[in-house]
Amino acid sequence: MKRRLIATVGVALCLTGCGILPTEEEFDVAPVLKEYEGASFNKVTVTRGTLEKTEEISGKYKGTVKEDIEPDGASVIKKIYVKKGDRVKAGDVVMQYELPGSEKTLKESNEKIEKTKLQITQARELMKLEVEKQKKIGGGSKEITNARNQYEQQIKALESSLELLKMDAKIAKEEIEEEQITASVNGVVTYVDSKAEGTYGTEGEAAIKIEGKKKNRFEANSKYASHCKEGDIVTIEVRGQEYKATVKKDPESTDSVYFYPRSKLNLEDGTVCSYQVILKEKKDILYLPSSIVYSMGDKHVVYYEDANGLKSTKEVSIGETIDNFVEITAGLEENEQVIAN
Image (cartoon, rainbow, N blue to C red; front, side, top):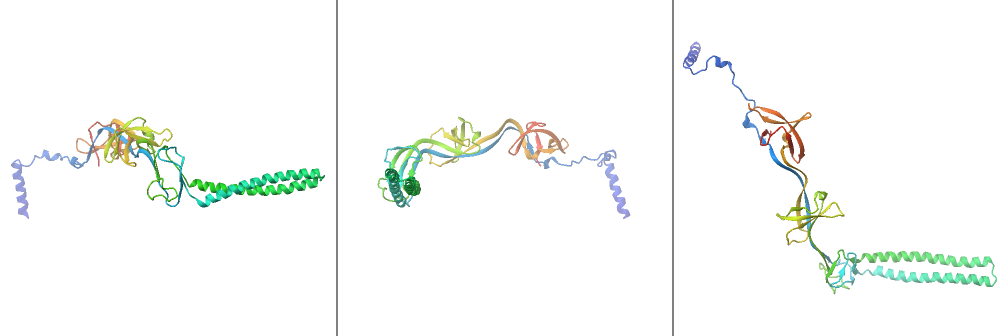
């Protein structure tokens, strides 16, 4: 053990003498050790640009307004009231299904109503004649009152029957009206299956076709429609392709908006378009991801790497937060880097 210690000391003395080890004064200064190495930081660059908050509005294409009236397959078509070339308005009756039970009830009720009305009229005439008769033959007030009461009871019973008959007729009429098919659009009748009357019609085929005005637009209903401006030319997307379209608003509905393509599109009704409407926009601003801007009391800070490679904080002022980004109004410059982790 003693020899080993001497040898070690000897080597140390030799190295000192050769100038390989630093002088004694150099040992007094400890080397600087960084707590964090810059290479371990993930950094984000302060960006200048535009922040937008958007929502998607979807619309469905409506070309020429058309209506195909197909038989229900369960009822016989009694009557078709239109022919090819006729102009119709929404609400016009164009076809009627048979409803034998209700039609019979309505007919019988109407006949009974007329008969009952006649019986009431006759009873009143007879009452009047009977009262006059009693007066002529010297009948007293008792006889006259008895005659009047007899007919009034009869008239009252007939009037009660009349009200019931009217109710039956009303119900039957409403049932028949429910079997009336009306046009839902204003337009021209372009086709009528003239052989359909008296049959169930042809399953899956229209008995009547009506063609209205041309719309050639995408119709959308959205709570974000109020953010669309009448007359603006916007970009819509249809099946992965972008097209320019003019915005039109519905004066009767704040949730409705229409997009009229500025170029001719050959599309099927129901084709979907999408439009990204801007709800909020900030232009030419500095911004960072909101997740790396921290609150400290009533202040906001970011972390950055200082000249010594240490993680330090810097106070910043912020503006609006849009989606996952926050506006930086003071404290940082464009292209400056801050620590993300």
